[in-house]
Amino acid sequence: MSFFQLIIRSITYDNGCENVEHEYTNKVLGSRSYFCEPFHSWEKASIENAIGLIRRFFPKKTDFDLVPKEQVKRVETLLKYEATKMPQLSNAQ
Image (cartoon, rainbow, N blue to C red; front, side, top):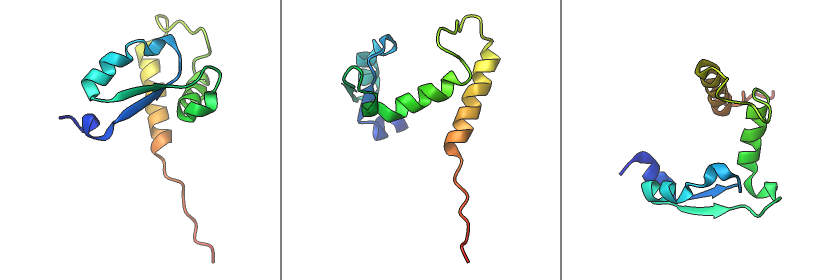
């Protein structure tokens, strides 16, 4: 059993066509799929946030066949780094 199979029990998707193979994902991970109601983006705040961050680099209708893989990898690395940064705690005196 993989690490992800141990920690992932369910996945909430938006209603985009990119999630058409959710049943395969469930089979691999042993998870269950849930979908947001159409036009209820607040039900899946994390995906909306991630899409917003990605759109800063790649606007809608970007043809990813024309984007160098190195550029996509740089953005991916940057977003992963930003997601893992811990806020600096200051000592109030």
